[in-house]
Length: 187
Image (cartoon, rainbow, N blue to C red; front, side, top):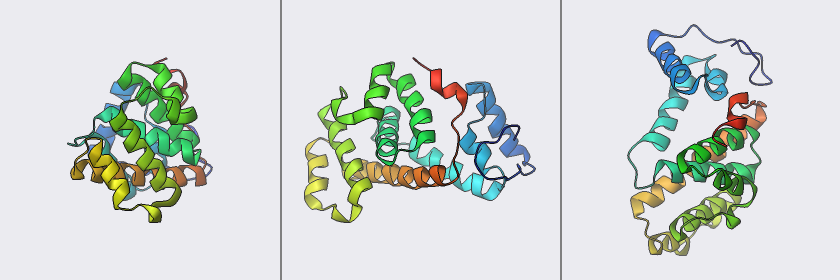
């Protein structure tokens, strides 16, 4: 790590070739290595666990679009006030939607965002999970079904919201800094 990306002093481990290739792909595609990856790079096993879960939830097969999964990430992160995730996933929403105003609305107050009824239902569910997951009941899942989500889609909404609740808490606890490039991207 050339710059400090968290409040912790954890030097980057020697990366195995496959991990270095992953970092090289990030640099090629994004122009930088996301600080979240650099923050995990002190321990390759932890980095692999994080990237495996991220790649499965955010890039794997799903009835939810990549944009919808990023929307969940932003709304959960907004509720949790996670600076890193708001900046990085807000940029992803702007990129995938082509609408900077959507990213801004989701960061500030998703209820004013121009989204479909299906998307509004999934975002409401993600927020309820974030606020009080033990209060989720069958009528909450039925609202999602009525909005057109399958049970597999509901699983994905819950999994993505859960991942970002964990990730937000971690990022905030270690004071993870977003890459400067995210701030101006796709505006």
